[in-house]
Length: 350
Ligand SMILES: [Fe+2]
Image 1: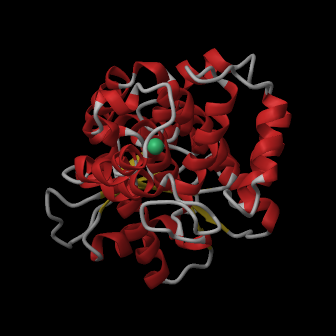
Image 2: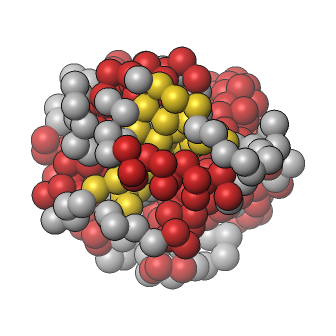
């Protein structure tokens, strides 16, 4: 059963909509009244199947979802919303009486964005709704930047054909590592964009330097090392660049402070930049360059582990080595390349 909540409160036509899926009539009425008082438009459903249908059909701004429901439980509804492209980024807050670690893990695995323990406090409910809405708005902003990011990524590869598909592969690897490092969905999307655009500043470096096969002179190095700053300036006009411009600027910093352009050290380096810097080094070792042959995955991991705590963040090195051991990345190379496009979409979730 699907109901539009009724109330004497005047609701703005543009008010955000919250779908409450809750089988307990008293709770349902309480939530509706409370939401409408706070300026939301509330709709309700009393069981799993009608709740799922309402979420798919009416595209609410947020879903408040009870876990124990007749017909289909809240976790299953959540999984189905995440599997449907129309609702993959829809904010879902789980209402639960149980908040054990296992329940939270099950909820997160099902794709919930947040939890609210029953009995809930009004102020906490409204704060969680605001937070879910904020996340959804940032995600929408990043979704709208996706076409521009893809066009800019093509521009990098057109300029530097020696690294063809390098940025695409990197986006796939960076997505895997950011997920393993348990970053939030917005940050993961930022990492994917940062990986695609990390070398965009090479557009401003002369071809003679970019394509030189011999050693660079000191002056040439100075010009080459300007590319992270040029890249940050290119990205800046995009509103969502706050999520990835720092990655572009800092992808050549080192954990020990010996990198460039700002000689940041340790945790001062944004985690997205640490991730992209690490997978950039890995990808460079396992693929051919004009000046040397490709190394094996084992060699690459060996070199990266040797630089743990020097060039790279030790915790990320550990996660990355475990990740590579768990996947045969040589064989999945094509999948990573193609997968990086999927990563743009998948990172909407994790
Ligand atoms: Fe670079």
